[in-house]
Amino acid sequence: IAGITQAPTSQILAAGRRMTLRCTQDMRHNAMYWYRQDLGLGLRLIHYSNTAGTTGKGEVPDGYSVSRANTDDFPLTLASAVPSQTSVYFCASSALSGSAGELFFGEGSRLTVL
Amino acid sequence: AQSVAQPEDQVNVAEGNPLTVKCTYSVSGNPYLFWYVQYPNRGLQFLLKYITGDNLVKGSYGFEAEFNKSQTSFHLKKPSALVSDSALYFCAVRDQGVTGGGNKLTFGTGTQLKVEL
Image 1 (cartoon, one colour):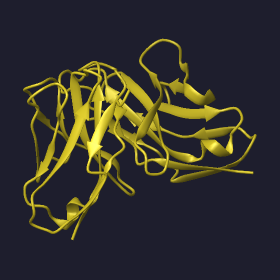
Image 2 (image 1 turned 90 degrees about the vertical axis):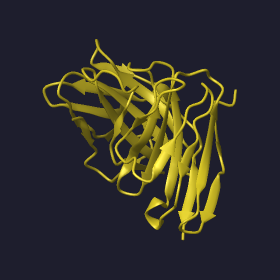
Image 3 (image 1 turned 60 degrees about the vertical axis):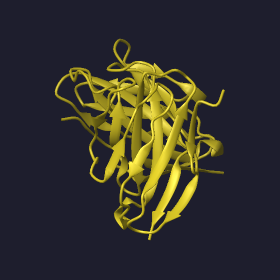
Image 4 (image 1 turned 90 degrees about the horizontal axis):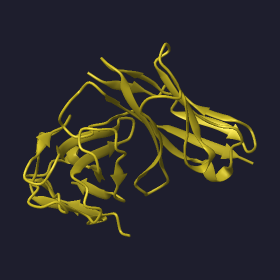
């Protein structure tokens, strides 16, 4: 069982470039999330999706966009990358939207913006 | 608003000794509380959660956590630490009264646990 697959594992990107981080899950979970992890700040929610076709903003959405065309895929796009977006990005999913279902995380995508 | 605090950046403990990783939370209503563990260069793994009922919650790998409503705490504990328990631990909270928005968790900043021989 793969769970959540993120790609790329790591990427170095020039400032101003567009970048899409991919996330695919095979658990048929309704809800999906993108978090960024920064030293000393823990994990912060960027965007989420309760179900296919809907998305919502998290704590730190500026500079990021998402789409949820189907249940399995939840890509995160940086339209014009800036150095402050250097971080480790985690995609997650949960079975129960709006409830206490635990989150399942991918292995992360390490992004460096120069 | 919901928030969680992990007051210790690092906890050091000798193998075989009991360990405690502290977590306090703040919510408007009642909380859902979670503990996750992260090993180097890996994603977060679920350890345990409190929803309602018994204040002592048992989870994976021998870990447990005690919910204390009066102290708004949810400390992670293990009776006998192993070197392999060394990792980064995150506490997370969700306000049960917040509807919609999926299971949007607020995470603490993490506590690095180091278990030494």
